[in-house]
Image 1: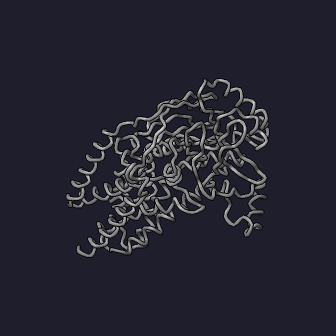
Image 2: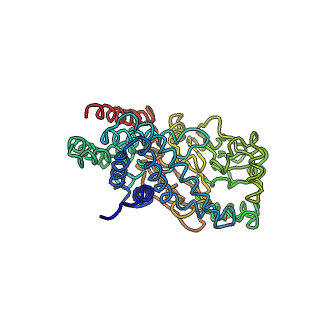
Image 3: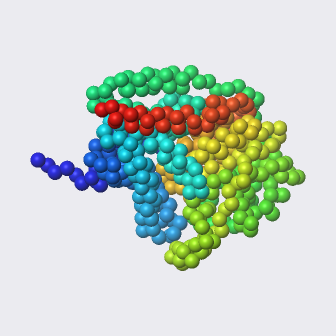
Length: 474
């Protein structure tokens, strides 16, 4: 008889299979299949610790495949390709978070099927927890795997997390079917049909037409020391902006204006990504040619890129890190104390910066405060490979959750106008240029806008409770 593969190898392979059914791949909607295999395999361990160990290896494999592009990013930022191996520490950390969740829920029931359902619910709860706090990193979430299908439209009811709950429950129902319990899969099949019908019957909302010139620049983020000067970059963006047509609002990307001193030289009626180092800030400003009409700061600085935990308290530690990497770490970027829409030309724009686009609560708060159009300014020059596509695709779900158009101005990355169904209507993904975006100014509030993630959290809690109770009965 052939000896089974070691547990770590099995876990890494199952996690890799799940990672291979995530964005940006077109078949991501099949994620529930490898997830079902993963849940069954993990729940089959003899002890709760065994379950946690299996989930650790599977979670690490998932992250390694889904976030492989981080290895290239780290190699570039340190100008030393082997430094990409540091990404494996993040993969292991994310696997550890999943393992802690698995240890907790596995102790609720010793029964295999009960554990499957508890793990499915715990997975969703953990995705929600990973959107909270200064070290938040909601990459990846199961709900995004529905983006190639009409079912993603349920995000206007419970956000992308409701999609995660649907995928996790489907995986658990598939395991139940494998173990000769058919009722859950029959019920979930009906839910899928309902979600598909809901999705295909959604129609784009009507609203006043508006237009903007959305810039896409092509500056090398890794070569800003030896590359173009801030003034040369600014002049290049002015040249691109000369294509603006009458009535178009101008939108520049994250940190396109590298100093407040440049703001007075920007064309009137625009939304500009503005940054400064002393004091450090990263924001969007609405400008009418005379005075700033409003500003909003980045809500969630990137961990270990714009925010370094306990930077002052652990200064000796960070000094060692600085010496090791060969450059001085910047001061922490203060997160926004609050977010609010920016007025410009009679429209309220909900603007947010780069990493903010993967947090549903940012766009939701802006919309609830009156934003009629969402604007994401970003510098995707830091991303590599799948990262560019993932960032754009995840941001499309913000349009669905809030039923607003999303305008996206980027350095590198994908500039686009995305309609309120999350469909890219105009796209500029290569080279520098300007997109003459046409969009709708919309109002109204979605169910997700009113209740947030509560539908998904309640379903996740029900899966955990149901798994625990089922284990006691069996």
